[in-house]
Amino acid sequence: MPDPDTGRDRLRAALVRPSRGQVIVAVLLAALGFAAVTQVRFTNVDNTYAGLREQDLIDVLNGLAVNTQRADSEIARLQRTRNDLLSSTGARDAALAQAQKDAETYSIMAGLVPVTGPGIRITITEGDGIVDADSVVDMIQELRTAGAEAIQFNGQARVTASTAFDDTVGGITVDGQTITSPYVVDVIGDPGTLHGAVDFPNGPRDQFEDEGATVTVDELGSLDIESVAKPQRSEYAQPATGQ
Image (cartoon, rainbow, N blue to C red; front, side, top):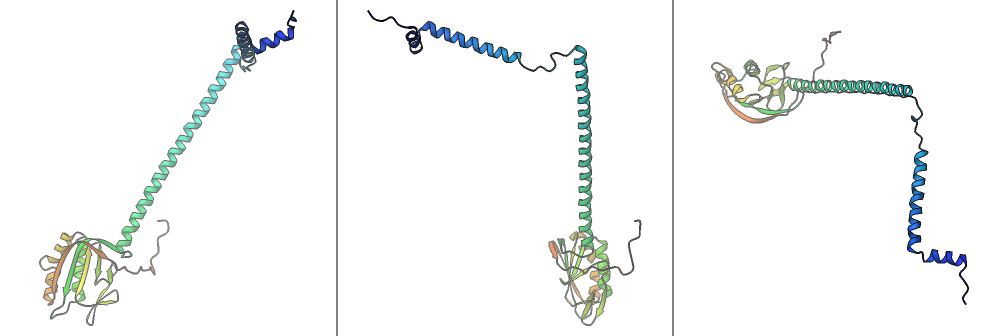
């Protein structure tokens, strides 16, 4: 007769080959254990406001409202500061852009930089007579009145508001530079208007032809003026204080 199973043998058999009922019981026990642990965890959660009275909760809410108002005020202040900075930056950039534009305009007027643009080329060729400086100055004045923005003689002498013309042997001087016939005058501005400033009755063309010279005027869509004038330092004039 075989020996009856001991309790240890039955436990070993249950662990190695559990029955369906044992599996169901194990699952139920596991679920029960999980629920118990979850309940303990929720019970142990630190709820800061759980034990406060109604008045205490109201005081907390009021404090939060005050802090929110302060935060909103600070945000509004920072936004105003940002807008002021943006406005100041825009104004500064606009002022710098205008200053740059003014500097370029004054540099062109003073003949300090090469320029390019539409205009005319006047060629004055001496014949039997001699072209004098006075006739050249009259032509320059007419061109300026017609809106000339830049003028150059023979590709080497830039004409500015202070340019001096004089007669010399064999030609004329422009700010001390001697130039000779043919005189090639490049002028930047509106070609049609500039052309009219040379050709009107008793105008520059007629004066030069009376002196025995021939004059041709070519309208150009683009021409380059490369020569520049030397900047002049004022000897006596100084900026007024407080201006």
